[in-house]
Length: 223
Ligand SMILES: [Zn+2]
Image (cartoon, rainbow, N blue to C red; front, side):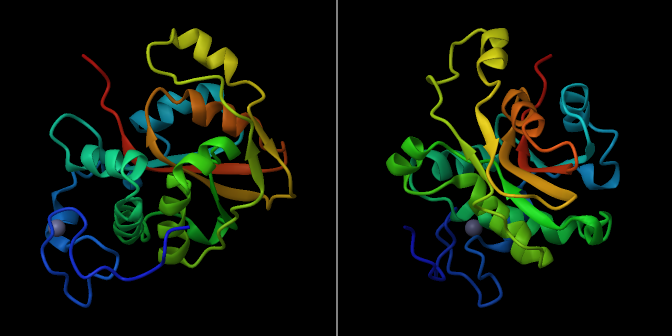
């Protein structure tokens, strides 16, 4: 378990943190993240278009920052996934929560639901990076974090180098809800890429639950 202590130095650039920068990254680094502005049009953006054809009951999609070549977010997510440093995702989510709160209908969202990782992955990594992002939204907006409502069975391998269609088929049935959910939730992941994982996760929600999708990053479409 990662200890919940306040860092004294920016996790990204090592600059000393001001008392107001208690999320773990300095304001300069947060301001360097390339904003998508999706919060202005949550039903008309690249993230929504990727997910909407595959996801029933989708209320809107908000991704915070572009995850392209040269974006500091790439390194932050690398650190969160593979270097035991998920705090940057929390800091980026808190920043995104503050940027977007005036534009989203937060009063309808009754719970923040992080995309689960399998028990095996959890044992290896020691935490779920999506849950760190979810905690940033939960604390920023004061909406309950629902971290034990959804489970994921072990994935049959890395998605790298796999045909995209095979990946989409194999994800069916990977997620299962194990507790009742409120009527509107916000589903959280670290990055939206093809949307295969999020679409499979959204389809496992009960029909009575509508979902917002929040991710800290989104990949740019290859041109
Ligand atoms: Zn910094």
